[in-house]
Length: 154
Ligand SMILES: [Zn+2]
Image (tube, rainbow, N blue to C red; front, side, top):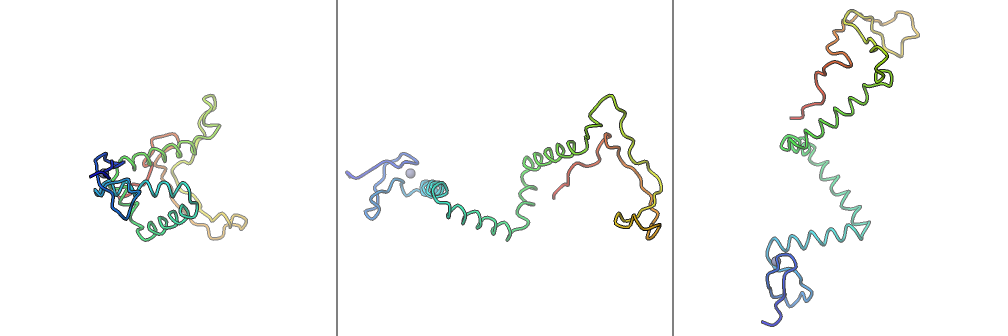
């Protein structure tokens, strides 16, 4: 056979189909998959419309499977661990005010456990209306140990 050529994916010799004179991949399943993958990569790079369509199709796909990411997180602990770490970092950044970062100043004393009068913020101008008494138990100080940094998605 004089028309044999080498597959660009697996490197083995193959005979191109007569109707595909430019065939560069052999017909092995893995090589055909590779061919489609490269074709898509190329298309994504060169065709903004195609890129747009793909993004939209993916969004639609995700919308149809709302529990996909939940399951993904449940089955990929490393991914979840990384997310939790990022959440911890965000929490830490949020809770450390410039004042709290200065060693010289004493830590602001936050809320103490006890009974409080609770009123909706929008009603603060109105005297003692719709106020209720609540008991607040402070479970952790701002700089103390945190109870939970991120939601466990299971
Ligand atoms: Zn091949």
